[in-house]
Length: 395
Image (cartoon, rainbow, N blue to C red; front, side):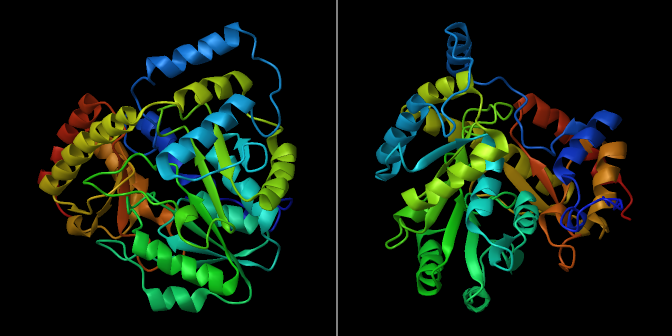
């Protein structure tokens, strides 16, 4: 998982690798392994959203949309946020539709962060965050989420805030751990943001994939945070359309102006007919979200029990659709080697945990991540292959 630095490569680009998650999908294809690495479903998207896209194309919504998003989609997002969370937004001044939440995050950081600033990131983290901060010329500062419940040390977090701190990124529900930040934890973070005049950038892409009665709380709703919170989200996970790349950013008007300028010169705009379809899908009733969470809970419980049975030390996620496991019970302390071993010899592809940690982290080589956004039959086939681990001689 290394990268060769070419003489023409920028100093920024030399500080991170290509996506390890996407690389493991290529490894899965190479070895015919079941892909439990990259977080995309292997089942169809809902018929309703697909038919809405076909209809939009047939009705010639095929030219550039307004750069920051079709009015129908922005209106639908405004309606949804008010219905789900009581958040009141102006669709004309507070919403920017992007090419996926990935673009939403980098557009947000480029619009708000300057070289020399510091951005706090919870570790383990989705791999884009560190690279995005580096591309802005800023410095990432890390605070560890500690297994098994992935809590954070409050004193340690407080010490990270200083005059250089521009923002903190909060991903809840969290990828890769499945942690859902509690209202109390968010309030503690909010107090620090207010005290030090820091932005909270929240990645809420898994907002509706939550389990066991856990509540998703938007940071926006914590007292004093509406004027300093930026929500990054998208439809990829909720509607099983990861290839559509329809994301969005919600922010106070003044910040939205900057985000829209950056977004305009990054991508111009997201696919127009897919925005039309997304706007219709977002008007779904609460039963859709309840069924979605139950659908994934069944898969979480199945894979969680299987991983325990074959000998992994597992951590049960409260949200999202990933499970982090400790590989040391198998005698391995090299997550990359173990991930290749699983793909090549066992026939199941996973993501090495080190891709979610900074290189110098002591824990970076002890974990791998499984995803369970798959047909039950896919997970059952993977479970049969993983059974081979019971008889493997420990390394």
